[in-house]
Length: 257
Ligand SMILES: N[C@@H](CC(=O)c1ccccc1NC=O)C(=O)O
Image (cartoon, helix red, strand yellow):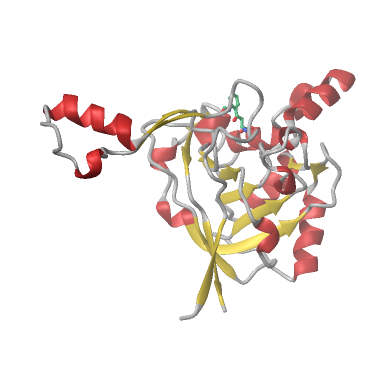
């Protein structure tokens, strides 16, 4: 079957700005020369044992589970989900949730810090002519995607609030994602708004919807602008970090051509 695969992951790198200061990945590249020294001392190798004196190239990474493109588990949002059950961790996510029809919502024109409402999700679904089905994987394209790697990335784009998140989960969506740093609108805007109004229930409200429901979202997705509104499949398998709040993943969209 002729098909096109679109990579929905960013590269894990410490060369661009992808997280707030101090929270980014740090990667030490061990080159073939350093790798040869390691092999020599590990295995007591004689001179000339390694072809071209080149050992193994390896990378040592200092990262959190939330660096790079990753999937968050309900445990990230709250200790409980579904109104009181222990929240599941990333190693407990049913893999059936991670493979399904993709739906792309285009919210690139919404202002930075804007909280997407359920009505906006419904209107966008209508515009793309899609009726949401259980198991759909919903990807939210915000203005952040185009700013990945720039100093303003973390503060750019709109985000999904409680109402919009529950709109998806009530219709059987279990996996969704955004190209923003957070599923919620940029957290500094949420905090500023909460400070102004005194209503702190809005802070991280999209994530906290997971306490009343159950769902996973991916963050720092890439290339969403290349996707149609629907008619493609998504595979997004998270790395199984034991008891983890999240796992890195390499989601792809599969389009038949
Ligand atoms: N983007 C995440 C939050 C996040 O990544 C995070 C939150 C608190 C402390 C560290 C974090 N990320 C570290 O890489 C989110 O809003 O789910």
